[in-house]
Length: 239
Image (cartoon, rainbow, N blue to C red; front, side):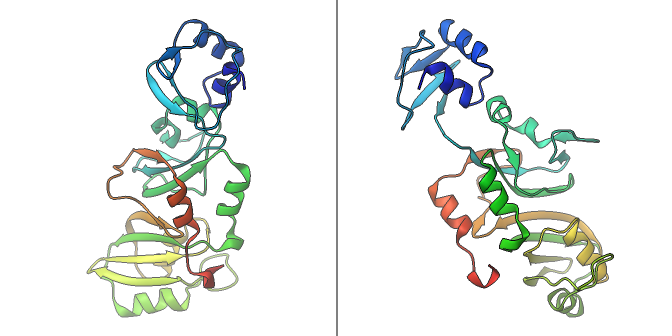
């Protein structure tokens, strides 16, 4: 593939912009400046640098972000900065999208990709992917509340009760809640229907993939093969 096409596919701008980057000597491969935009290179295991920043060629982008509070999962946010402000410009340019959404005040694990099929599979409610939330609530958690969440609570405008896949009390005013749907404000609405109020909400896991302890709020990283395997590794009874 021509170097200009490689850069274009990885989000470094239009073909014209990418040609200019190359001709300006801002692109290197194996320590050598590449100044011919039309040089052909294999993309397998290709590592290159643009302005001394190292990138590996990826046909599709799969990444995780530790979303902090105060960011909206939208390219057209209304009141807060978009989560895309936390990503490098090339990733934004190549069109990564959140897989599902977190409210602006909800923190935790957010997956993003530019692979339409991947996004569809992992955002579809039919797959019933378990999502784990750490919930802080206003009033003490009691057995009646956890039993109600497990048995199913009635949400406004939902014809059938909605039940948590798992629920456990983790503190006087905290619990861990697992859901397999993706209804609007679902955790907040479920907790309210059970007689309490969410004070803070943090998503710690999706499928079998947990948010790493060493990924700080606002940081992102690529998903590797192990991450993708863990994502798909969850109890088949939820399929």
